[in-house]
Amino acid sequence: MPRIIVVLESIFKQLVRRLTFLFSALIGLVILIALILVTYKKEPIIEQLDVVNQTILEWDSEKLIIDNPEVPDEVKQGYYLVAESSKYMGPLAKEPLKRYAGNNLSCTNCHLNGGTLSGSASWIGILERFPQFRGRENKIGTIEERINGCMERSMNGVKFDETSVQMKAMIAYIDWISKELEDLNSKNFKGYPAIKLPELAVDLNAGSQIYVRECVLCHGKNGEGIRYEDFDKGYLYPPLWGDDTYNDGAGMHRVITAAAFIKNNMPYLQATWEEPKLTDEEAYNVAGYINSFQRPEKQNKTADFPDKKLKPVSTPYGPWTDNFSPKQHKYGPYPPMISFYQKTFGLTKTK
Ligand code: HEC
Ligand code: HEC
Image (cartoon, rainbow, N blue to C red):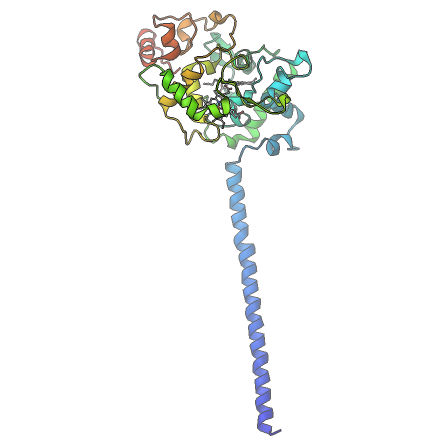
């Protein structure tokens, strides 16, 4: 072989070696960069997501309460009482002595997401507000008395003894969510955010049309709700009127309170405080409509609000300290009544 070819060949081989080296170095570099991108870039994104998750945590009863080993037993008991009330304190309770609620509702049918949702009378942080003055009894009331208020009216049942295990468990639950799930209550707010009150009385016809359009699917033609197939589990969609729901002494039986709840929370999973579906007027008309039907009667309602001028104007049962008709108390219009109380007694009424 001529010498020149041998030299060329060795130069060529060297070139190939160098190119191979360069090439593998390049691939190495690409892999390195890719690795850096994966580890370096992804890490902070995951961390960011975690931060977001912590501040706008989703309500998830299994994850946060039932399967959470950090939750004390008493708190879990409290959770079952408020979220599966029918089974643990109501008509479906196995032992008759444990039946305190008279209907098959759960507390959390009105205090949504286990009592953590802003705009649906969340329980987060409320213990700090008790004891507080209550017009219905005209005295300073405790949290136990407030819960018993919902027991006798919203749950159409009887009071718990204030030292009972059930009462203690429910308060332990309220205390626990206030401390551990504080962030779920995105807007610290008491009760249901108010609606702007229409100048006219409830229009029951309009209410009935809204009911058919927005509510009947879940709550039924006769407001009877829909049960789970497994009867023992109570209601998938709770009843709004008839024998198995809140009684006529309940807050939800006042048009103004019901309208505020409905505006911010119904139709379920479509309306939120941030993005309601119904207008104030629609919520008001449909609230009047659902409250126009027969429901359980609370006994001895005349004793409510010993100082009658403290009675909310939309309380549909008498006696009152004014000359407005029972019909106007039930269906409005409310603005004239509100200005009457302002002028006559210097009282600012919101409901
Ligand atoms: C039919 C609906 C309904 C049911 C069921 C219900 N509540 Fe209520 N609850 C209300 C309404 C309405 C209010 C008053 C909200 C407002 O301030 O406008 C209220 C208020 C409360 C408050 C006071 C909240 C505050 O911000 O001061 C507590 C505590 C409470 N309920 C606990 C319970 C418990 C515990 C149960 C079950 C044993 C229960 N509720 C069942 C409708 C209901
Ligand atoms: C997609 C089904 C659905 C629709 C539609 C719906 N709701 Fe509800 N509603 C529910 C559920 C579920 C609850 C109980 C929420 C819970 O337990 O978390 C509820 C609770 C209620 C409550 C309180 C509990 C009770 O039984 O009194 C009222 C009042 C209510 N809805 C009124 C309405 C009105 C009025 C409409 C129409 C504007 C409406 N809902 C539309 C599913 C629905």
